[in-house]
Image (cartoon, rainbow, N blue to C red; front, side, top):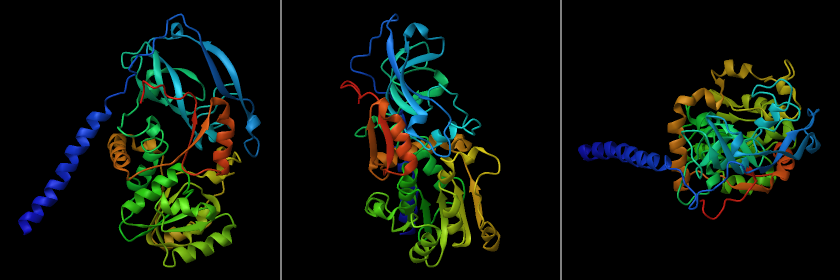
Length: 394
């Protein structure tokens, strides 16, 4: 019996490795158009784009951004190592807001420049030996309908049977599924079965993924979000309880006391401010806190001003309880990302990691979509569909 048990324990990881290798080989394929897009070198393509009109004040206003008809683009403009991409879908992410300030960690957007955004699109023309027309790519395309980008800024988008092309921005997206997977599994010792895990901004794309990943490990997940989203958080994010933060710090503390009367073992935080303090006060001995972001600070612009960020007032709880707090940027773990991406793709394909889409139609919807994201008016992944995928592309 012991021998049979040992055989099973050996075969399971081997079988998983074989399956993962097969999936990786499949993902390396790139779906091509049945009819490869044909764009004449002399063709002039219209480019509608979203640009920064002025620096946001205390809060981002939709009028801070402007959608305009930019200069036409042409394959003839390409230099060596560049590709011309028809943008299909754009990812609306919180980090974009931080780039609109004059001094920004992620790089500052100039007045009149295209607002940065990750996206998925199809190569129309190429002067890169790595890409050819008809291939779908993902990367920093910018909020526009057509993008001329350096080959280093894009990669081939994964082709997953039965899943939409925008999986490259959601479950396997750098700022969504991969960020959640790194934060849950790579920064500090990950959640264990039976532990209590709290996740802030839980109804957003990263939070939804983080909740699911922790729940799949056997943890009890407390989603910190709005009470109005409780059905979504329980059914989709797999949360065991919901702590409403909209009533202020005292109400959140009371809600956490009910949801986690014995304290919290692991906290995945994307909010900061009062939410972070409330959880720090309820950490169990040996607790872990992973800092993914601080969206409560983003829209005020304080995140890029020295001394303006609201730091944790309850940080001494870390010392009192032998707890650990660590921050991360997903690119700090670049060497792990291929394996993290593979596991995320495998989970998405099996239905174990899923992020509902909130889709706004057309590039003109981008300012409102970003404004809505910061207001927390959606659940799941917020996307802007710029150009619907043609029938020849999956």
